Image (tube, rainbow, N blue to C red; front, side):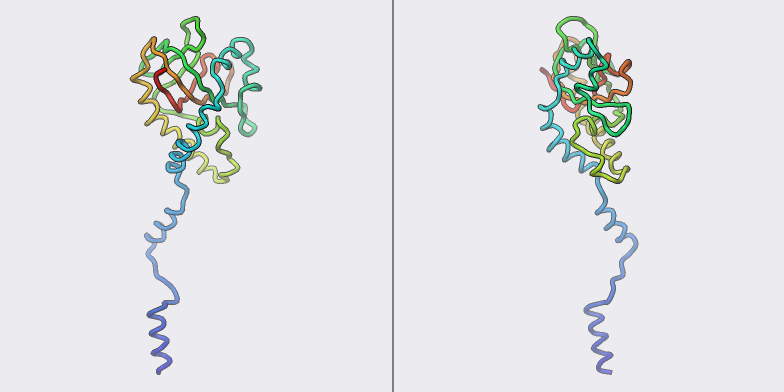
Length: 204
């Protein structure tokens, strides 16, 4: 009887197992899951914006497009996987030549009034912000869902933080400095003008 009593006391103090509710277990698992929004926020401030100085001069790319658009991929593009598309990471400055509720057009060369850079307003689609710099590798994220969530979270930052800063300063004749990313899927459609997803915009 004494042994049984001792065993009962030990089990009360050091139970052999713990009963946990399903809600508690799910909460613990959720806390261990990848959080794309937190990742994107840290990546944006700690890696993406500091990399802006390494972006290609957009004027150089625009001048190459005018001469030989099919050489842009080789000289300035970054490819991901085996797809036809390639990405550009660009920085530049120029006057606004067009602006409405849907897009803002910039000219980089000194002459002419045709937009060479086009920044579309509204929802941001695609993977250019995630893939253009080469700072994020798909091999580091074997879970395809997580990799796609990163792209969506970065696009969300553009929608909520960058585009609202562009609209008040996007007046025809005003100069803007920008850094951004572009995805080129069809050179006949996507190079003239270059459709850019901005990560930084400010008055020049």
